[in-house]
Image (cartoon, rainbow, N blue to C red):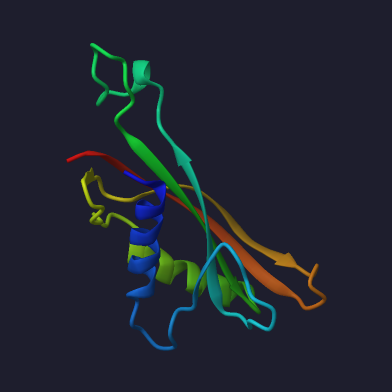
Length: 140
């Protein structure tokens, strides 16, 4: 099991969005010259402590569940545009059950978020909506 496998499944699900205009999906980095709208995703990994993991083996106290958090930054030149990008990301991810080799995945859940915020640090105003999605899995 690899956190990278989980991240790849999430990115592939976002990339599968076939609406127009195409959803630009970036993995943790925005190349110079990339113009909004786009969604840039950052990942964090967690394994709940065995004593709180309902899937853990009571004999060896091994954590079996893997939680992958996808921090989706939906970016556009207006707050409305950023919300539209966020809605597309939500439609692609929320409640979806992904396939990760060797794992049984649970439906993706949204765990938290932040409203559109203006950012002028790049010299050009952009708006950013942040939503955090959790993909949890256990061994198959």
